[in-house]
Image 1 (spheres, helix red, strand yellow):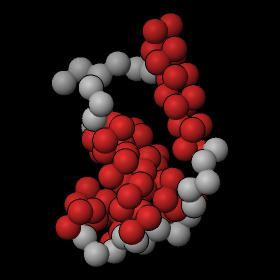
Image 2 (image 1 turned 90 degrees about the vertical axis):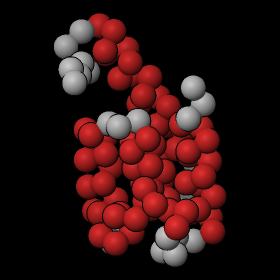
Image 3 (image 1 turned 180 degrees about the vertical axis):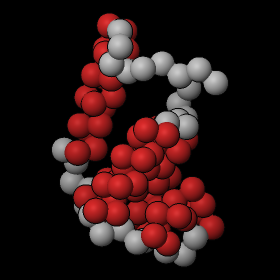
Length: 100
């Protein structure tokens, strides 16, 4: 599968800028930092973005997330390691990410 390089052309640069702007909504929210990272990881999983998934997983681990919780994000509905507010944030993330 051919992938485009975000920083090699004008269209990709505009695309990257929009992603950063969209992420600001999460960053500026009142969600706890750990929940923000869970949301970003789940959206990255849905979008199949390896670069984003790598970055956000490392950020979450740096913020104190455990390996078990990181491994369970894709199966959060069947997992017992997330709180009700985290589950609500993950559900909203899935709905918003799958709008297409």
